[in-house]
Length: 636
Image 1: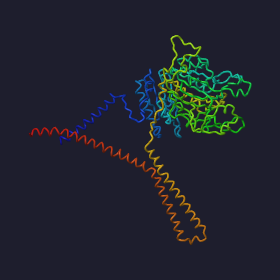
Image 2 (image 1 turned 30 degrees about the vertical axis):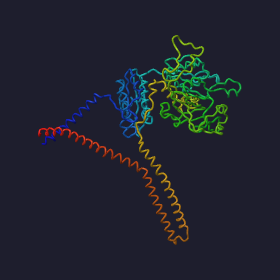
Image 3 (image 1 turned 180 degrees about the horizontal axis):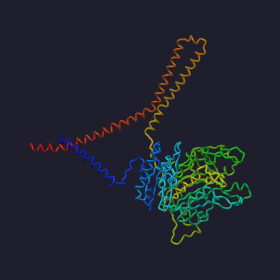
Image 4 (image 1 turned 120 degrees about the vertical axis):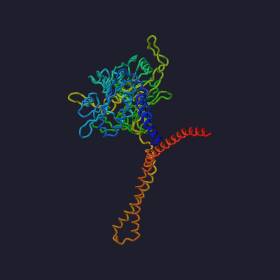
């Protein structure tokens, strides 16, 4: 046996054993080390997520219910299932042992399936056999607290990190968030002096009571408690300087505020007690939140209402009348929603009435992010045109859209300065040792809506009687929008900072560019050929009709027969060329695919092989060079 070949074989075996040993060693010693080379850093968690994970004090169990076998028939869900599992494993690895992940494949009629339902993960019917597909997450903490994501919707993939981290945050902080609610509108339960009966709370107010620790705040309040997570301001009017100062100081402490202002709040009962009908109709129903909005970098004009022809709804003013399009009553759809904000994620439609608009104040350093916007077929009209409106059809008279998209709702974040630079207003005395804030201690988190009517029941819910009980059923997403905003603001600043991420499924951008360029390049040629084909068919039909209708059809001249044959041949030629043009649309894409295959299958392996060969030759030369020098010395 050749000693050189024996040595080479032994070296290969030794290298293989060394490779296996190093792999096992690195799996243990480098556990937790990760390098995210994806373009959009899909496996790199946000800094806010890291801080939330670091703040977990008690262990949390996470249960991922995923029907893995059933997902084999659903490629999109199978791929997304891998993405969700890998992300949860990443969170567990970064939680210092506080998150314990359990992956469960619930089989039909099993205890795991019952466990999923018990924890709040719903199954989706799959196929005619009636099986259930599970793809959700449930969590429990050490105090029997529970939270769940019923189903991971692939369409909300960009909010995966936020949804999961929100669930973890809720389990790590089991206490209900405190919401202070200040409203000049009659939203809570109470006595209605106009009807002389007790009134029910508005649906959005009732929902908030169930989900949060809601504390009604008096309009004359002089302090916002430190434990308030979110301050809600609905149609603020005639607030005293002391109350405005309390709100100002809360904002400077880094408060989270949800505000609803309106140029014309239809639910405002101002002027209802007036005897003169004209006085009731002309009563001021605009919100008043200056100078606070100005200090927060927001411009709101209470003298204008947005008319939007692109989103206008039909309304019936009086029973028996035909519905009429009302440019001030709007039904916003997904085209109006911010695509990358969790507040508007998953909404279907939002209704508004006589809404105003918001703009960033010039020179302000806050971040102004629109959440809801009008179409470009919109314009700002004077509020007087809506105040005494008898016929909504008149709004279309001389309507001239500006082509601008107006902002109905916005998120404002950043450092702000006080609206009271001269100090506390008259009558406000600070406790001993306490000084008023002049600038933000922590960044402000504010969401503002330029409409209050969107909160009223008639724009998003209807009542129905079920077995003697009155039930409300939503027909628009207004309530979901408000609860999304409260959920988001009620979390910590770290949770708010976790925003939408890029999608796991990346489009073939190069292919799409090629397809678009090919469409542009061949479109004109395709139209030209189709026009020629149309003309050829018309001439051919005319000649054949003349032949069929002629009394001397059997004695057509050779020239006529030749013309018919010419047009038939021309028709076949154009059809053939048209098919070639249509096939050419994918020619460059196919060429790109072929190039990639050649690169991956041939060029790259050959390049690596040549590189390995060159390295081998170089190392061989290095080994033989000293030997040659030694032999030369001995010869001398």
